Length: 188
Image (tube, rainbow, N blue to C red; front, side, top):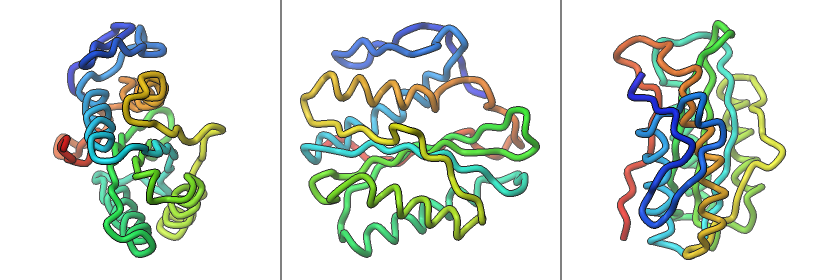
């Protein structure tokens, strides 16, 4: 696993972001990847939904093919209904006590183009169920609406992203397999 820190906050641009349970260890690279994507999205549109779901695998795999297939199918479905939809993402692979890995997936979409976060959540649930036969876990508060220039909204969504950056559960994979993946959007 990549470098881990136990700091309780992160300086990111003009922000000092709180890392809940940071003393337990978190990966700076993963956190910054998610924040960079959120910032890039907000440089291109006024509002974004930041949505999280947790996807459990039916069986152990040495690769991340399942999450890649999920991402590709989900984006294809969303873009079929919302052409040219701006989408960013961050996913992490974890394996703790279970024999199978699971994934935490954050998707960021242009909230000016999607009528409600529930549209994305429903599509994600359906795609994962069709792919694996397993219903993904949707947290009680699965999304944040973040507006450009709204510091509080950015900070709240960053706390959600920080959960993906936690060190626990990372590194239990073959060397050639990644612990995380993120979109490569650049700020406009």
